[in-house]
Length: 73
Length: 222
Image (tube, rainbow over all chains, first blue to last red; front, top):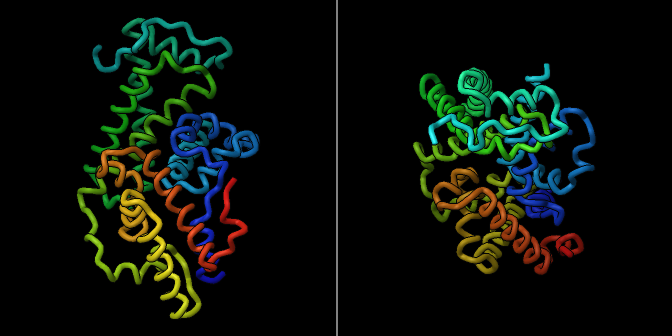
């Protein structure tokens, strides 16, 4: 991949992206679906798009998923 | 209201809760003795998660030992207060514990954002724009491409972005300030800063496409 295509990927935005507020509001629901392997991204494509693009929300999601799996395990 | 007291006393858990979640809600809003025991148990769980998450982030936070323990304790205590203030709003969309864990993880993120300014970065200088491709994790094949890319993007930042968008873009991309830390500095929220950055990315992409640097087929949004 050259520099331009990498820049293109960095600047590209997904119109389905719901933003941090909505993603944070439903993060517990999304994390449980993900932990249960229940097609979370298909149920909530806007949250999935956001978690891919937003570092802090993605990090919170990873942490919550780890907590849920740790508690279940 | 005293810390640890629920916003709603003796609430009836919403219908359809799993047994464990219903027990949590009843215990946390029940008689004092039952509530104290549930609070202690929940605090212990929150503290464990706060510790685990802070240890995972300790490299970027540059925090260890007693300072990490203290931050974990604060995050767990603040999360517990927030949970007790909102326990009456829990609707059972997930298990109670998953809902509760979310609070402590958000507290850890917020505290990490504030902690960042204990060792703030050196302010950027004009030469930092030359390092833009590295900051973005781009790997231009040639030096000429590197210069052209940095120059085109800088021009678009100067010409297309509002002062606020420019401020946010420079802080996050060039200076490497974490988004949550920038929200603290600007007295804003994660959501507002993300939205500003989202709009900035969209405008920059459109400008670069209009100037023939990027494919404009995918730059347009409905």
